[in-house]
Image 1 (tube, rainbow over the protein chains, first blue to last red):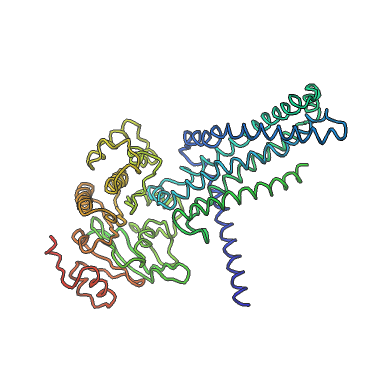
Image 2 (cartoon, rainbow over the protein chains, first blue to last red):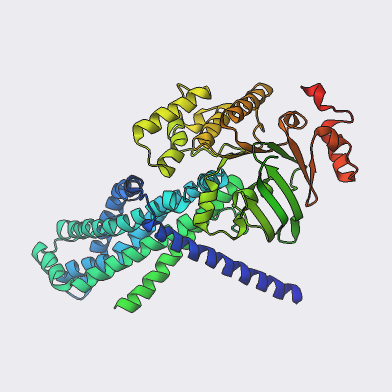
Amino acid sequence: MIRYLEKIGNNTLWILEDLGRMGSFLVLGLGGVFKRPFRFSAMIRQVRLIGADSFWVIFFIAGFTGMVLGLQGYYTLRKFGSEGALGSAVSLSLIRELGPVLTALMVTGRAGSAMCAEIGIMRNSEQLDALECMAIDPFRYLVTPKFLATIISVPILTLFFNVVGIFGGYLAGCGLLGVNPGAYWSGMEQSVVNQDINMGIIKSFVFALVIVWVCAGRGYFVHVIRGAGFGAEGVSKVTTQAVVLSSIAILIWDYLLTAILL
Amino acid sequence: MSQVVIQFKNVVKAFGKQTILDRVNMTINSGKTTVIAGPSGQGKSVTMKLILGLLRPDSGEILVEGHDITKMRANALNEVRTKFGVLFQGSALLDSLNVFANVALPLEERTKMGSEEIRSRVLAVLAQLGLTGHEEKYPAQLSGGMRKRVGLARALMLQPEIMLFDEPTTGLDPENTLEIYKLFLETQKKFGYTSIIVSHDIPKVFNLADQVIVINRGKLSTFASPEDIQQSEIPDIQAFVQYTMGKIYLSREME
């Protein structure tokens, strides 16, 4: 019994310690923006890695998601004789929900895992210690450019996802199934309001922060994460953990933000 | 009498229930070479991280040039760290940067030098350490000995007052080991830094030492020469000496 209580107490302490560590990581990661010299070129390089290099992945996923929505929406709406509402159904689903969530999940899988592994390997091979010993702040040098680049890239990728997805829906609905193109576009125009677009953008900002916080943070603390092990195995376990945690956190925040913003 | 640059006063450091350093005291003097030796897992690397402020002790004071670094905030600690140069065991080069960028990094980040000046300084240091022609290579393309030399070049760029060497010869063949010791002697003569060497390479590394500190079971013992270590009456130190140096060892025979 006492051993059981000890275990609960130990785990609670560890979770609190971990939350504290991650909290200070978030503050220091964002605080690096105010430290000089600001590494603008490093940030641009990260925008390319996280944002521009995700172009084709987002293009294909958005295109096919839009086409599937077009197909599913068409067969559902036809039951009620309202195929003309396809444009608003596709665009609202994408702008308010699927665009931000799917983009964030894709960026987590593609760029989040990469940044976790990169920082984790740097930690294990003493590269972060070396930066500190040279009096170079690892947050300003390494972490903050990733924070900013993710916060810039994810909302832009989300908007791109929405546009491609809406065209995908158009292709499936109007091109293949014969929905009136005029009805598709006017349905979208009439139903999508600023509030919907704002909701999508707010979500994408929050998701971006979640991705970079969780993925970069887990990599940064790879050496102290309980049960992760050491060396390459430690990095691989922590990277998996970061992707899972980040994906779950994105879906939880999606629910919370939808409940707050609706 | 040389000036004290680093001093430990009753330093305690434990990880969980394991006490690594138990109320230890030590003094390192300016311009001298101190070798820190001891069996594995006894706290050599922890001592080094404490000196650099990468770890904080549970209690006690660590004075660097008279200032207690254990109570310093990040900015003040960064100022103190500018006095240090470190050669890590695995060299710790940034593997996404080439040799030139690695060596230029401290100058780019810590000084306001222009790119031309940085270039000429980096090329000069690389030439001194026999690395000319390797500027564009990445750490993964270098041998262990060359990586150490690049690490040494990077550590020396800001002309540190105190150099820390963490296992500088581990993983190197005898030829490269001698090369590193030669470079150590040359650079110390040129830059006049205080050096702290954490090493397993016993007894060879003792040739470089002005004093030797042996860490064992949380305690530090300071000796002025290898002979003093051999004559120690502490049973753990005697066992360590037998294991690492054999029964008979005189430093003059190694000269």
